Every structure is written in structure tokens, then in C-alpha cells.
Amino acid sequence: MGKEKLHINIVVIGHVDSGKSTTTGHLIYKCGGIDKRTIEKFEKEAAEMGKGSFKYAWVLDKLKAERERA
Image (cartoon, rainbow, N blue to C red; front, top):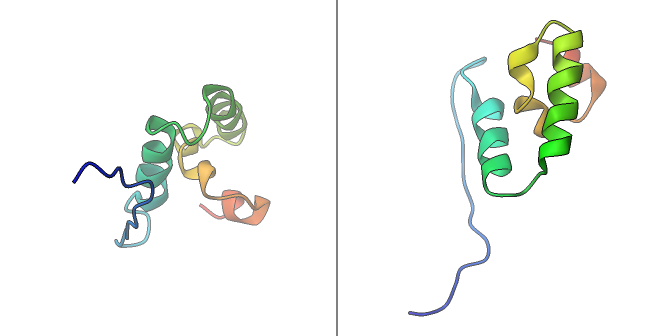
């Protein structure tokens, strides 16, 4: 004991459109893996595309094609 674990592996499974990317992106944000400015940028871009709730999913969806598919 006393050793801090620096990395963990997480598996997220679920049906299509069940919120896997959104949940994982939010977790990454809450753990400090991405800064507030980046989330605000994603929020603005998502709102412009009419997909305001996708800001956390876009932490994982890097390609334009991925962002346009939903």
C-alpha cells in the first residue's frame, strides 16, 4: 500500500447513442484531462451545429466526420 496508481483502464460499452462518448468525455474533463477553455470551444461549435449537448462527446470525437454523423 501507499503506492499511487497513475493509470487505470476503463471499458465503456453500451448501445448506439447511449451516451458512452459523452460520459467518458465528461469524466476526462472532471479529472482535469482537458481544460475549461477547450470545453467552452466545443460547446460553442456544437451549438452552432445544433448539437449543444455534444460538447463532452467531442472530447473523444476528433474528426469532423464523427461530429457530423449524429
